[in-house]
Length: 447
Image 1: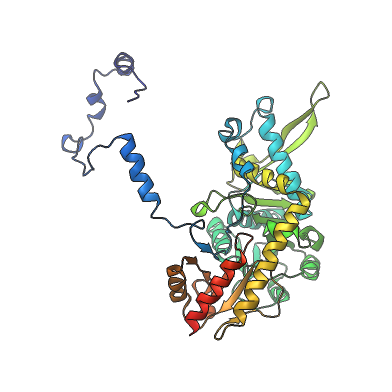
Image 2: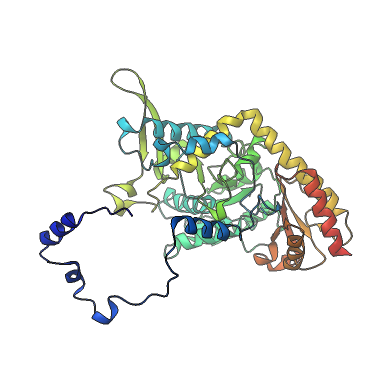
């Protein structure tokens, strides 16, 4: 057993604070509460503990054990082995905040490369590194827009097809502030232009999702123009993997782009840690939370990396901070940077195309089943689609689980009008055989 202190060192420490023995530290605790009897299992050896933990872990069924068609913001994608190999290196695995550039060049360069690739992917001018996840990135977009207008426009309009968790997180972030929300009370099938009904001279930001929560693809160029004409900012929350195939939001006129970085080389991991992508126009950079790594040269003319922008909340002017974000997901940004570097432009497009075509194959086959129907049959979609079912989704998912299939997301949980509607996600990890098994199993339900 390892003991960090010798008896002599412990006694020296006690004498330094003026007590004789360890019990003297607990004089203020009533005697009957000092050493309670704990209902603990008998002691175990390391070997026994390892076996117990292994058995416990086998109670969990993961996307590796089941055919997974669950998405709704987190997806089962293939992660090249090189991603974890690089993440596990000691110089990265323990890295936190690169305050001292002279000893943090590797970490700073990794963050710089990540930012550069996010800008290329989104068509934006600057990216930070980074936020906690896609939900907090949307919340930070709302906060930033509020401060861009110096509090004179406290209204944020959310699309009803923006991930419900993102909307809930934003409301939690800004409770107790003047920021207020509108738009997401519209029906889920409302067209994007319906948001304009809510845009007035009090609106700071209009936020949509691309592809949206139901997987649908819209070109928001005209909507962005209308929003700008009314003096507000336009934000788009993206699935970054889809941008390997689709038009970048920067070309649509987006002022702020957020996203969940989990599809870029980050495992599902029971919900985290994930990565909040945040990119914007250069003119808004001083209102952006998080940190920005830049490239420069040192006094010998050699390339060097530094923290070009580090938000106020981290240092001495916290009273004037626009955000409480004072950390970064350094390890997660590195994972995404490695993933994007390994795939490259063509590889990312290939993975996106696999997601697109596999999802359309699944949708075509499922829509042909008696009792099933696509909710949005005439709208283009990426790797997710909403399917009307003949029975409650919870019951169908229980039946699917009996066949080792992890079914889709029950949309009725967030949209009361969408009872018996399942959101199905298909990725490159679903071979045709799994999709056919899903079809056959759902056909049993309809019979």
